[in-house]
Length: 139
Length: 139
Length: 139
Length: 139
Image 1 (tube, chains in turn purple, red, brown, yellow):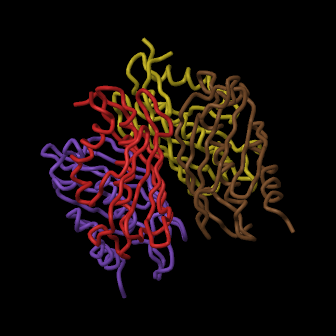
Image 2 (spheres, rainbow over the protein chains, first blue to last red):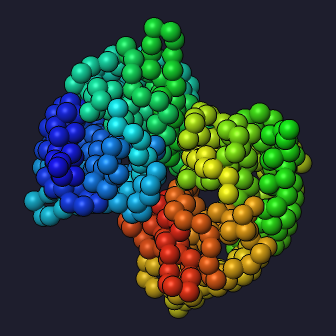
Image 3 (cartoon, each protein chain N blue to C red):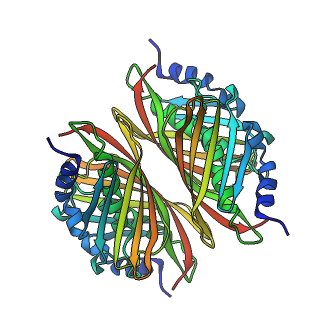
């Protein structure tokens, strides 16, 4: 029997976008996941900070996989929508998104995620997401 | 005197993230921009569709640059927050984000953007963004 | 056979919150609705402007009923989530929310709505909503 | 010298909308507030549940006043935008919104709030808000 961690890690490993970001899934628990990527010049915006789109990508994936850990058998997860607040510049050696399920439902599951820049002095909160996920029958 | 189009195109060309996505700025007008990228396997999620994060990246940049076309002299634009609804799978030969200023202010400017997949039968709306931008003194 | 307009107007008339706001449904079309209320001191915030919550209430109802006009038989509509940008103070003789379906689905329907203050010199855009609605079997 | 609690309570007491909802400010701390209202038939939607607009109103006010507790002298707070997820029906004897500052800035402050229905068996999370507030010079 496949565990939720296996499902999540297998799906994550097939997201080519995560490879493009250099991202790895650093933690999977029931209702929560964590995704990280190191700073790369290829992911920056005009000031040399990491682009909001890169941070949003790992927040979205982290939220989606947090929902997947609680998915009914035979279901998969699609993102319905998300909102992101950008709180500080994307300056750091690496970036980590931590997401957890806020309310699990049969069809709709709502997740929250925070993204942090890892800096020499510690982690700095740089973005926060509130996301709506839907369970659909697996293709 | 630098035109807004020059400002926008110069800033866009320094966003390394856009190069990673293969994106180009296909149109700049007062209060509106358009950004495109072709399908690439490197940008996909687990089903082979383009990742929501890639689509969000061009929507965010398109919204930010739409705001920049109306920015006061000496100002630049930061994303405060955005919300994205995913409306259809990211399946297409290329993807285009079109953004326009919804309400321009002295400090806060609100933009709306739609993203389309370009398919043989025509364009398909796949995502929509509502974004809040802030003008700050240029660094 | 009940028309969608009958369904919408019957449901609207049973929303006591709309009576508290003094709101009326001024238009119902396929995929679109319009709701209005006059200025009332009972709906103001600390500056005497109409409270964002009152404007949000008619935007939410207008979006929900726009979705209801396209609902499958035997279904009703619940709000999953919405985002509102406040664009100008709630100053006017009356307030009107106009919503339309942006993308209709079998389960999830996304709606957009704008709210305007009606002033002697004309209508002023004061808020905009992007909302996610879900169809559920009628109770 | 006026304390932040005095500022908040004085402003709250001049929000007529809060009286219409029967709302009271039940707690004010640095960076956090709590607002409550009892169930009233006048605040319901078509199923007899409390309308999302009523819940959103106290979430918005709670977020704004949480930001106000940290406002620079001579500043006041305006809502730029908010997103609300509705998580469960508005069924309860009373309703409470608790908001806290997520990230305080000089101009922009981001707040998060949760709303609960108070039921005989305990509190039930029914909605969650992520909101962007701006400090502006007091009128």
